[in-house]
Image (cartoon, rainbow, N blue to C red):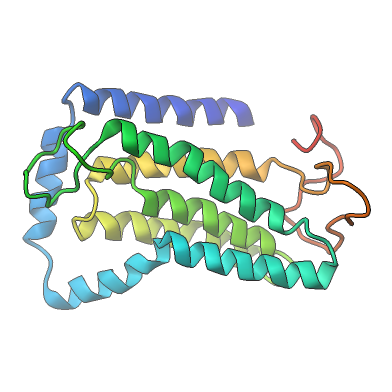
Length: 226
């Protein structure tokens, strides 16, 4: 069932991309952009600008790295660095190429275009994908100090806020944000199935020993995965 959901997310991302490449849904994107442009008073604009930093990639990377280094010192093991590295590589490997290949400009580009292949890197939204993946990593790294409810809210609330805000500000088309949602959820699900203690590292690298509720259990469907 887990892998079926992964496949479904991949298919949804592919279907949305194909639909946009064929010119579908562009009228929806334009209508949403025009609506938010006409409903953005200064107080909401500046509030949204601040909240948009919840999805800033470099900031989330630094926060995750700081949490991982704290755990490295506490656990005397480099394993907490593994999910940080994996998150960075997976985002670059999936989101980066799609941005380059679709070549879509942002909603307020001077060309006024909404189609693919117009000279930009707007699709999918990196902010949305970043927020899902990196807050998932933070929930893992801080699992020993956060309650289950806090971990759940950390995974859910910032990505929802970022998806709404980045669209509201006109930084991304609505479909950019939805594509970022699909991509981020897919990567997050894959990363969550990795048992970081089962990944082979040369001795004498220690296991990640403290009680982290989100660490994979000892049962595993394969080396390093569940």
